[in-house]
Structures are given as structure tokens and as C-alpha cells.
Image (tube, rainbow, N blue to C red; front, side, top):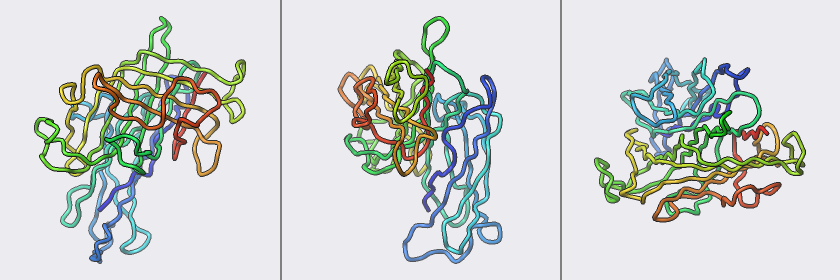
Length: 316
């Protein structure tokens, strides 16, 4: 059975210092193996449930759990896809990690999605965003066409310093055991790689033409930010998280993100859409990249990837 996240990834609070409710949802689809089960997924049949667990941006660990909720799976047609929903109220400005798990039952197992969630205060002087892009498959550690999730918020403090969080989650298949990850299984399997950071070193924002005060298709806003990062790999089958440390991929793990804010709501099937690019590297060279990061790119998305869902907001 396959779980696909379909809920919110970017939500604004009602005011600075306020809170927001994030509505989460996911579909479940039975693998097309020629033996579809005859029982419905809902309470009158199997009673399938999905558990949604919310973590802070420090990573997937029992000590980082904020809250969890469980939704029953319902179907509109027999043997068709099912959906489960629930909500997390009272969330403050911040970057979160959401995991989705099929509750233990006597019939099905499923994959283990990890999703970034961004809650942001309205205001000025910072950049924030959340959503997903389609992986271009330009990195050895990536899977072409997979749905990559991101969430971030970076802002200047009154003392001139920087504060923020960034998450980027992509999917790939690899053998962590063969790479030397302690405790990881020695076979090739699917993982969610989570690039996370709360140590920002640089932020720059601009709008074209200079002097404009809003971000539109004709006056796009750009931002670039960078910092130190670390990486987790989460087994899609078991949900177990493994650290990918410097001994495996090189010292001084860094990342840089370039974004362009062209419009609201920021994504859709037709232009104009916001766009995103990321590069992750260590002392050993590039580890991962999607698009090309070159710093501020006023008015151009040629080196970036348009959003498939979500939104980016550059507050000047």
C-alpha cells in the first residue's frame, strides 16, 4: 500500500505571535498486484487508520515530538484510493517535520512519508516558504521525478544576526549499510533524506526593479540564504532515522537555497509560479542539488525549479 501526502504545507498565522491550524491529509492506494482486497478500508471493513506525527525542525526523534493525531481512512468507491485527515491547531511560527504511518492492522503495510510543514507569521524583513518541487534527477543521490518537500523561514534579528530554519526532504534508493552507516540494513531500499539546518550564515533579498514594494510577475522578489546543515536518512519501510555524518560524506556540511517570489498563491499548473533551487555540499564536494544556485537571480527562473505546490513569500 502506498501513502501520498495531500494536506497543507504552508500556512500563515493570523498575526505576528499568533497561531494557525494545519490541516493534514493523505491518500492510501493498494498496490496493483492483481489481488485487490474485497473489504473496504473504512470502519465497516478493515478500519484502516493513518497516524500523523509532528516534530520540531531538530529532526525525527521521540524527544522532538510536538503532537500526533489519527484519522480513519475512508473511500468513495470500493477498492479505490482512500483518504484520512486530521488537524494540528495552535501551531506557532516555525518549521516542522510531519511523518505519516499506517496504523498496524492485519491486512496491509505501507511506506513512511516524511513531509516539511511551514507555519509563518505575516510581516516584513524575512523570507519564508513551504511546498514541493519535482526532482530533476541531476544528483547521484536523487530520484528523477520524485516529489521533494521543503520548508524554511529566515529573518534578521534586531542585533543584525540571523535566525531561521530550513528543511529539504528528497527520496532515493541506496544501501546505507554498504556506505558504513552504523546500524543500517545492508541492502538497497528506499529512504527519505532530510537536509535540515537551524544555523544560518547569510541572507539577501531584492526586488526587480529596485524600489518596488510588492512581489508580482512583473516585479519579482528574490532571496538567497545559506548556512550549516546536517542530514538524516529515514527508512521508508520502518521509519527508523539514521544520521549521515561527516565521516561518510565529508566535513563542513553546508547548504544554499535561492528562491523567487512572483505571485500569490505561488504555485499551480500554469505560470507565473514561484521557484526554488538548492545545493548541499561538504569538503568532499557536492552532495545534492536541484536546480542551480548562483545567488540572487532577479526576474529569472531559468536556473530554478517551479513549485508544484505550496508558496514562497519574500517580505522586504
